[in-house]
Image (cartoon, rainbow, N blue to C red; front, side):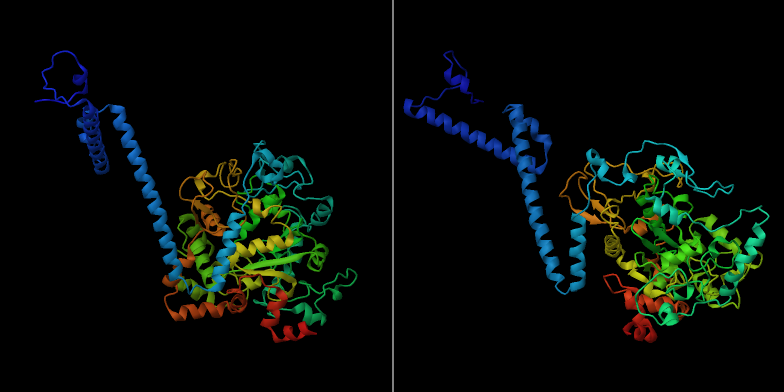
Length: 598
């Protein structure tokens, strides 16, 4: 069989292949045409085989052409194919977006505005840069101090609760000004209530005297729900003033109101923790925040520690000494009265759907996935099994006539009733921080459903967003939280170019390359949910409401038990912006409304 070979055409020696001679003018053009046709045919075969992914045929082709030529052609075709696929994918994605827009023409204007605002917030996030580290809050500075210690400014005590140290923060160990920003703040907030330690001869007489007003107010079981008592008592206008010489002139006086007075939380076996137990202070911004259990209080305590410079701010915060230094309940009475009636101090609170909050408390404390938590609950309330959610609600609906005064007779009676002595995790939200009586004192009231943009708006109003809020960052994976236990969690490891999440902002999930600025981002969980997951509090109660509230009578019973919470919740649940206490009190009470107009 004859094989075409261009070398034979120019060879002067004899050849076994019959050579065809063309005229001089046409020989070169015929030769060129035949070679071009052969190359074109081989190229078509290569494209076909590459598209069909039949690599088993490649050796046959490489017998005719050089190996590197084949590889170059294959790579070129694969590149062109990928390019076409990418282009086609962009077109399809655009079509899907257009279709989605067409299907959502009836989307409400409020939701559209909220999405636009959220996208704007996402695009404005801060990016970490170690070359200008002084620009960032000190809590994000590199870890250079590996120790934990008691604060230098803390009084020495023989009682050391868990998580009673500050870690990785040299200022806390050596600087007596920490956690205060100025000497003026320290002078004001370091005036603590006198309380002798256990074992001191004065301890029992002190407790007996201090418990008397707590027991008297706890016996009333519930607040009066006057909403604007400072207006009713003094019949004054909305202007707050400070009159240190005469108590009767104070507009906000929790000691004169029918409320458990501040300080009851400091007394064990007090039959109730008092109305002001969970007020925490941000002295730099003059913000008094009402941290209600099961409404994100843990995250606000962590943020408080972030603002004072604690590098272990991701640790479990409830027993940390720098948090205790900022608790309103621990202050002396005259300091509390000054803060309550100083117009420069702003009070704020967030409220949660009462149905969802109660279910979250049940799943977290009563029917916890952790056996130790369940057993602790059963031991405290004299139970030998995990009660159902309906049984739990029935116990709460069985009102008691008085609060148990000690743990000896607490047991199951401690579970009955929704009153001052109820566990703070299911005690009504309006029982906290004077909300039921002094609502006009609150400058900001928000709903947990709108926590992302409302917490940002709150911090912007008091000047904490630009200084700390937008730089706040936390790790949402427990495995990445470095440290010895949840009391000594190290600060997050940040890299240059990494976006900072921001306080109570949604996580941006990167679906492709984490270093690509234009990558498509998915919204993750709200920080309240993620941080609760880290510390074992997450219950996903919102997704379980229908399965637990499986009958109308159960839902109506909860609404009746938490009637005061529902009155306030219904006014703010659909409102995107923060509400003022003056506005809400005027809507909740006709008396408050008439006094507000005068």
